[in-house]
Image (cartoon, rainbow, N blue to C red):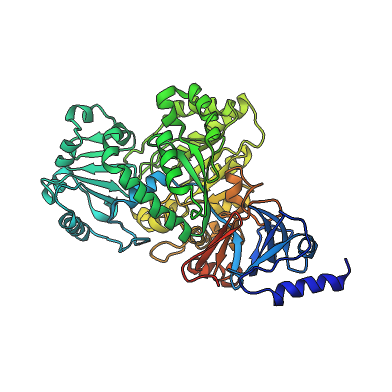
Length: 580
């Protein structure tokens, strides 16, 4: 085709077509229509073609990336339309959150919030609370607002910020109403006497649990799991879950997220969770997909790990367009970071308390061996350096017994680690999915309580990891952090705490590294880099529209960028007030 004819095609596309995108080339191959998205700039996350201004899509797949002029060979051959919804915006590959629990998020969103940090949610704005007096005042206000006969569910308690709470304290606030006070970590709960009675939780069964206190009405980690069967009907009723999932859909859309990793799917019940998520999410107005990664411990509780590996292998037969099981599993090493239940090596905690093993080292090794030998990608939640150390011991043992190439064994959460562990992760070929919000929300606090300044400053030791070539992704574990990948990228790149301090700038990610960690590197963590994560021909047509160019505003402005909407599998979903 001569250059003059090509230029004519481009001129038609640029100046003759109406803004609504309905110009169609008359000659072409029927049934092969293209949709061409144009933007002020398209950031591809492909180093060979880092920027573009147009991308052509057929169905749900990208066919070509570049400019309207470079797309001419396609536009001359096939019918097409120009989509100018985000013509004035910047397109980025669809943002990915590789660790978020939709069912847990739904339960939390159905609760009242009383948290150390502020939240901007679809149905409310929540101001952060600090100090024992302010927190207890808020509990009394929430109790007074709750209709008679209704249970009061409150999420976000953090004793280091809000003071200690016992069953007796909650009884004074509500002697007759059941109160469930959920810890900020979601791994602990406090119940008053009315709640214990209403849920038929007896003193005898509480005293039989390892991680529970009858006197305080306190249940954590394995102790919380021990009463989960009695808690769930109250906190996860069908109405609450459906309403919470509907809110979560808005939360994810507002964050520009087009792919979620449900890491530990089946925490309540595999079939039930899949069914209710399918009911809520498998609709055209849902602009994201969820990759489901079963929590192996939950499945094994019913079958044992060898049979669980067989059962999990059959789950992809249920896959739908938006809900898809992966050949991955999740296991747990130590306890939660927010509640300082992680396992620390010497010198331990300042107050000398002990962390928790969710799975003992022997249990973790035995379970991991089953899934490793069956070929699964394994994700292990490990938060403290002792937890990470045991997890790496397990990986090293498995590699010696049965070496695997490209195993993508993933350390999840990755709160506090040591320099030697970074070297070991690199040597063993493991990867990291980290929550960089830990540093922002907890750095100042943990410097004073639990860790001390030196260890608190290197929470989320990610700069060193990337320098050693370790794949790193960023996740929210919502609501452990806001489901806003650009904010998480800012957390990892700025390393600012909530008090405005910069902790260990040597561990900062560059802007490009931080953006990769919520796009192509997050896709790699999930084993889906050939499908999503960059704007490249052949991949899914998932894009996030931004009001500003991250490379223009830099790290300082990264968390202030407006999400203008998303394109999911080739269909535009503008945010309110966005698009033309």
